[in-house]
Image 1 (cartoon, rainbow, N blue to C red):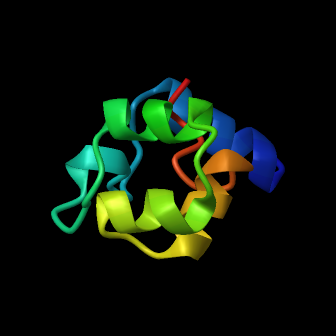
Image 2: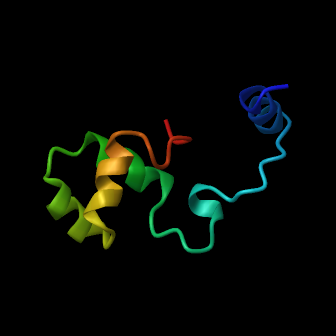
Length: 71
């Protein structure tokens, strides 16, 4: 199969080996934090300071490039 079909099969069967989100031991954010960041109208800089993370992470969260598994 293709890489995409293999990845879909892995996820469907719960065989994800890479820890994501709060399952990762170094995670600074929770799923609820990510949801709040996405709906926030505050600047990325202010939001980053509020949560103690990099401004680039806030931008990636809002573009759904990071924490994409959170709805």
